[in-house]
Image (cartoon, rainbow, N blue to C red; front, side, top):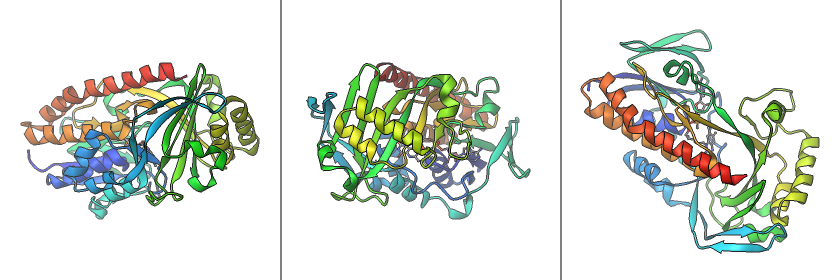
Length: 371
Ligand SMILES: Cc1cc2nc3c(=O)[nH]c(=O)nc-3n(C[C@H](O)[C@H](O)[C@H](O)COP(=O)(O)OP(=O)(O)OC[C@H]3O[C@@H](n4cnc5c(N)ncnc54)[C@H](O)[C@@H]3O)c2cc1C
């Protein structure tokens, strides 16, 4: 296919994978990311699954996936902190930040724009138009929506179906230096630990340090506590100290001292003592709403949506990044082999829509037994 002018909305991993591979294929590509300061330094860890490893090879970044923190086994804790079950299931967590920074270094820097928020997109037969928050506009042969959970681009492809569906529970999260975990919780280290009983689900694992450190003492402990929240209480749950209501989460630093103390009290009563200690030493937990979204269509006439813009799966699947990588590789193949853009986008949708649906369904199934 001829060289296309392609504009990507969203500069996280889905947008970067797409941008790098499309630049490698010779297209004219720019990425617009709304964050003013960039995304580096804000992630934790992830499991390197096959589509991720594949795309990393294609963009020359396979070395990132070789460095991670290994959990040698899974343990299931009783409420009193004793081990109910041990499963031999080694798993490696790689650093999201190192992955992001390494991948970001492969995009041509003059084509990646921070602080550029897209507020609307218009589809057309021979191109699409981006409208930015400052009122400026830009046209492209193809617009790729890689703008995640709160995607504005998905609305141009699915005007009547843009809303994420709230699952009924949220994930409280903490990310603490390994060294701050009290000795009495040492059982948690080097293992993937769970505590699951009716209505209660918590887990935790080590991830690399903020700069990707994997040596003992310099790693971080990531804990997650899934908790039910009624839909009517969601706005309060996501209200920060400045009374701003966030749509999908409460970022770190947004929790009042009263709510922090209440969390610690609840954890001491509800969780095994090791997890309660991990919760107690986290000064700034965050809260992530758990949502599902399935796009009825992934392709319009000159627009396509990928990653979390198209399908939001629950975190139990640990497949967000891998799913984005799979979308991008399929899109590149379709653009390379189809006779025209329209045929490429239709073929891409056929290839990936069932994969997205299956992953969302799998996440929902895991979620049903999760809490
Ligand atoms: C800062 C950050 C940290 C993460 N840490 C982890 C982690 O530790 N472990 C893990 O498994 N997953 C993590 N994730 C999620 C994981 O990266 C995603 O599941 C994966 O990248 C696929 O999502 P995505 O790229 O489609 O969407 P996202 O990662 O959600 O990215 C969407 C991007 O689009 C931008 N955007 C949204 N709307 C607009 C707009 N209107 N105009 C311009 N830009 C817009 C957002 O700022 C964001 O950068 C993290 C994501 C982010 C953004």
